Image 1: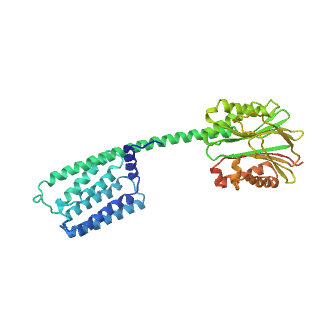
Image 2: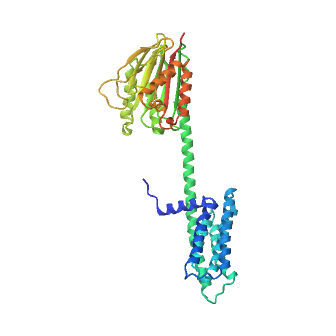
Image 3: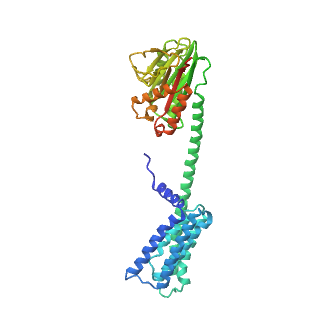
Length: 426
């Protein structure tokens, strides 16, 4: 985890202050001002040289806080926001006059409005902060203070103003640094967003097109990714005498999983002319083991071939185990997996099995994200079987599952992918 430097921390704090509302920024000023008044009244060694000025300063700071609340209420912006710290400088000056004039200990209260003003964008605000401090130092003289008791007050005040001005310059520079970094991060985020959207568009373009070569069968599918890019995929395509179809679930999420999913899809398709289903799985596994071995990637696959004339489906399951054969009468069975996922070294070849789709039957294969739409267990597949038995066609099944996935928070944790092959009842 990267360690943030002190400069970064100060910069973030500066811009964080600038982004606060006027009322929020005014509250610390009001709080410290109230503490100063209490100290003046309770500490015997602090002289209250003008009780009237102390009351006026207290009323003035409360009114300034009210103005800050009004500006916040109306979402004010621009130079008018400088009104509040400007009035704070005046209030500090009146407080100094009321608590010992040149001997007042509360000159340091000016640091809060100094930071407030300096955090604004633009070098001119350093000058504004310096002038504000000068105003606070001059006000006691405007109210009647003299240099007789403290002839060095002018020099001391000028030096204090320079010190506050330097602090303002530092805060202003740190705020500028923070804004530049935030702008850079925002630009990178926008670029990443554009790239994600483009990758998502490519992934959507890889989804299979409507089936035209198997008129007695309906194919439908849906993939609701947990992120912009998903690691699940479904696919179907025409082969001699029927259709081939696949459902895959790559370990992981996001862009990396999406790239692997696209690779596995392409490799499985490359074996379309081989009768042996294990060839497709072996090629996918070899690709993951050799080319992507450093990523420790693996994927579960359900790959099948449909003979359109007979309704016979030959299938191979590589660690997937989430496919159902739902008969027209509503009975169903799960097609269990007896083989490891692709990408995991195995001594035994992938076996195959077959079933027959009678008129009205459906074959449903889904990713494990479907389980999270219910109680998370494999027993949840009974809900999918019931939903399949009740639906009149494949698209209706998919539409219902899509509604569940979009409405459920579970889809935020895992991709939800389902492929349905249904043979027409007639």
